[in-house]
Amino acid sequence: MRLWLSLVLLCFLQGAGFACICGGGTPPCEEYWNAAVVFSGAVARLSPMSIEEKFGERIVSYSKLSATFNVETVYRGEIEKEVDVITGMSDGDCGYRFQIGERYLVYAFVNEQTKRLQTSSCARTRPMSEASADLEFFRGIAQHPAGGRIYGEIADFTRDSAGTMVEKNLAGANVSITGEGTHIERTSDKEGRYEVAGLRPGQYRIGASFPDYTSTSTKEAEVAVHDRGCVHVTVPLQLDGRIMGRVLDSEANGVVHQRVELVPVGRGITPEFTAYSDEDGKYELKGVRPGDYYLGINLSNPPSAESPYVRTYFPDIHERERAPVIHVDRAETLTGRDIYLRTLCKPRLVTGIVLWPDGRPAASASMMISSAEYSWHSNSPPQPDEQGRFSFTVLSGLHSFLWIQAQDSNGRWLNAGKIELQPDGELKPVVAILSQAPPARQ
Image (cartoon, rainbow, N blue to C red; front, side, top):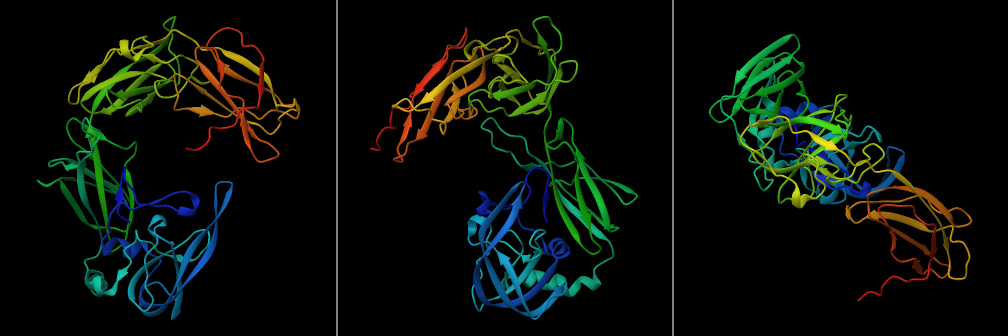
């Protein structure tokens, strides 16, 4: 499998609510050793089937396609003359588009849950007419020099001002490969490439360094090397701008475990870089590209029990219009960017009752709470009890809105309208009458 530090091959199941994303092609010398079975054969039949898999606590059932092959030649592993290989139903769940009667070279892997052989459009499976490089590798395995090979590029993954990755290779970067009792260093060539051959089979770590750059990952790449096999590893680096400071309360004491966010100016509210304050309130943002940013706490997420402070921009500003812009030059280090959290959000109790228009309690009602300050964020308080009563807490300093709805005995959805909760002061008990129907579709 071709390995990237920040972009890996992801082949998710459409039935589980995901899509298929492949990280790039893999050469035969790598995929051959990772596959459980490699064979050539013709498709005899295609059969839809249902498979169940466990995702956390959920058991998900979804449709797959079983391709039955008449096996011609087995290049790796042991299988019968007729074998079934599972794949997805479509491009969306990484399905390979097999055709009955066509001949293919199949790289098959074992599904850990179902114990069945499977392949996908992300694998190196292909028509036999396109498998000449694979067959040449298979024929030459015995003549290949002993040892494994790791090769790849050192890539600049710094994002530009629009958020797009530069993705150019870095010439002259230091590359380190460690494992199986050896430590090897190389320098990437003028095209940013490197290669180490003759490695003993086993586990290896690959890292890289370059002036003014840092890794995009918190740990080095780890790969398994096979004898006469190869592994392609692209190591992504990014410009190493840094911002350091402390998160302090109104008495200048450090505030622990606060999420410091760095949001690019003109790019909405999504932070590009984040870091958490330590036990002394210190934080450090690393790998910051050149550009202009807003710096602060609770910029993109509302205050919570873990961070009960109003949105605060550096140094202690609450409105973006008044917040200073932090400019970072190439690989610049900025220190002393202390953020003061002076306004604490306090929990306030919201109580009330939900009723149908005839006064009966609406125990089945669902509720949602949102705020004007964080309109993109919402959460669901507990449902009312059998008497239609409810209670939950909200934090002060937020202009919140409560939405309540339920489906009546006739299948109609009714709601209580937009219930406003003022940001400060005591909250009066809410009496919510489910009397409003949603607007008719145009």
